[in-house]
Image 1: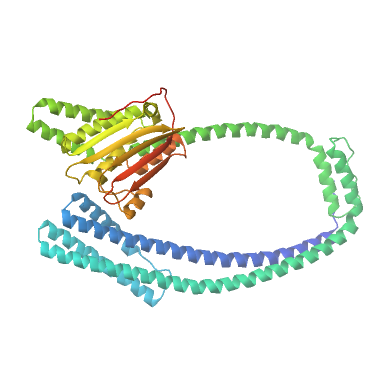
Image 2: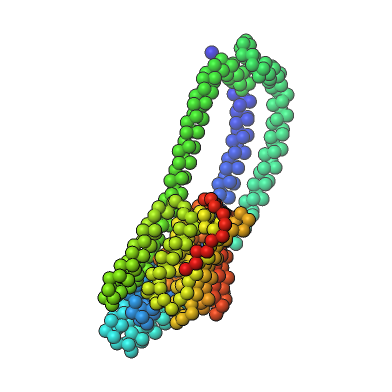
Length: 500
């Protein structure tokens, strides 16, 4: 039978702790609400500003694509222009303001109105271009640029005004937080003093029953669960603890059963960890397949078009050889990208690629050479590693040269590293373009899509984080790309020249 508890001690303890708890809860709730309000306002402002900046970026992109279309009448640029036009048309009605004021509202309405006229003038320019009315589309494009400048100015002004207003409110909320923190400190000190007083009183009031309970607990800690139930000699909360202790000793057997169940649970958790590892491997393979799918068909179209032209101008022999090389290149590129290849295989693929380029541009316009140490030729690298490097040298280096263009590929082993160098004597790059390339930004040009960033990422996935790519270039002095990889060898040593 449960012991009846005297209410006096419990009521005093409960009331004192409830009062302290309520005070703490109110202070903490106020502090939480204030911080939450501040954070919510800041998040809303930052989200709105990001949305406005993205809108500005879309306006710039539309102007750039429109200008390129008007200059070259490139249908890819037209599609890009239509894409950004749809984005802007769908976005500008949804633009909002965070700090509601007359000035901000007028700025927002001005942005929306200018956006409508901006899109209207852009469409007029496209129509005039299609009608070959150069004077009209030039005037329309000037209006488009003027509206874009005004839109960006209005958006910047709106962002600044919202930041100023939000800063003033932030200072007010910060002051309230400061006073709340001082109040919380005062309450903590008060609660500490009250707690010490209550602890001293309880120690004198409950020492004896607690001592007996501690002695019994020490016996149980040695593994002896055969002790007699403790007598309940008090009528306060200690009685509840004593009875709970007696129940605990009686339920030790059930606890052992729970331990066994926990052991089974740990076994299932290990099985789940194994499944997680399998899932990570699956995601890794998916990432590799995603990188493989980035091939741009523009290069394939150009090569096959060159084959058709050869078929018209010549008999079937050269055309047959050309198409065979194209088929070989396609067959190589469609191999499973998760399986590594040797550097020798990559070199042979580059030779095929060189043959196609020489067919397209003529045998005297460019000179290609590949020199690979035999020790390096048996090293394993990811599929399609050399071709993007050579293609980058061609498109961004020597394609604009009328003659005497040269691309040199060297590969050799140094200690436990494989070094692959691709050099061209082309026009080189300025510091801005070089920085963009080192930051993995895609440069314009009709490449296959497997650019330097793709090569760097696949090398990291196959061979680890120690893979490095160094780029040296200067205007008029050509470009040198060095790929520094771990030397994972298939077997075989010696020196071999694989030059074209």
